[in-house]
Image (cartoon, rainbow, N blue to C red; front, side):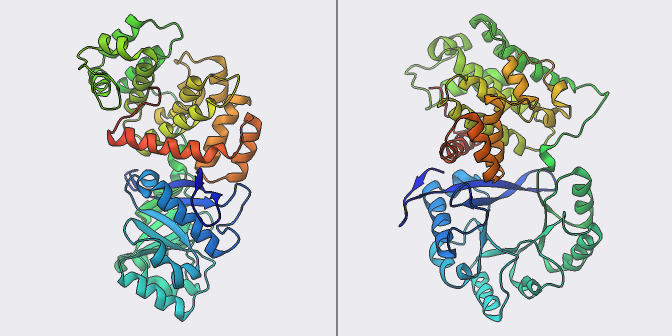
Length: 418
């Protein structure tokens, strides 16, 4: 995520995966990191080099930007636990994930006991019942179980065994709704995986009226020949949009010296495109009601990251890329196939094809961003190459997009267009 200051100047690549509770709310984020896109392991030459990379990410990027104040799950190896972690990472706001490859010894158990006494929370990653990691159970707050590799019956038995210990069970690699339902019923309270990013198709049912209003608004807002008067009328027809536009234009983010009281004034002072973009963002929030809240944040990050990358490319419209990123989860939010979700939106042919998976420069940018957010560094580099962008541009764009989305979500609204 851009150059960082360290003893060996390097680029830190950090992505994140949300860890959700049973209601679909974000509990924390696992930070995924590499020293370079081609790395396939969680170390950079050595454990110490890996420590420097993560420390640089924590200090230079700031956990607040990466996790919005929620716990950051950080993978650690034995040397960290023994020698380095206390000097590098404070206990507040982090959970130390003990990798499944860690060599469990008495010395490690003693070190974990010491860290727990000092306020550190720890998790066992990819825990296997009956493995040597059983010795570390008294010192950890979380146990992560790979439900792709663990039979559901075995995962349920583990939940029953640990229920009385106060240990929080995390089901990871949850890729489908059925697995999510089974593990939740078995006693797992946190979940990691992309099940919430996949649509549960509701064929033959109408889109709820409240969502339909926002679909139509989003469609109208992005009509190519939309006039100023038409934009004003669209914003004014929804009270929440009107309030948000006026609050935005009167915020510290907008360099306007006089207070703005009407939508027409706002359009005159800052122009159509910024308001068009922000109204589209707020429509998306309305569309996502009833779905996992993280979806809106993820769509915002994708939108801004695509836009930033688009600003460096010839032959693509950065604003169009923003809209492509913004709509990339529309099928999940509406529980529709993407073809049906896009049916009412007058997007350009390039944007529509990209969202439907057709290859081209626009789709390659979206693919690069999606791969990067999941820590699929090799796939991100390959998509970046197809898009004609330097892979090294992804970290800075993604970091900036995270910060921007955090500002939007927290109400500290800033506009990249101003």
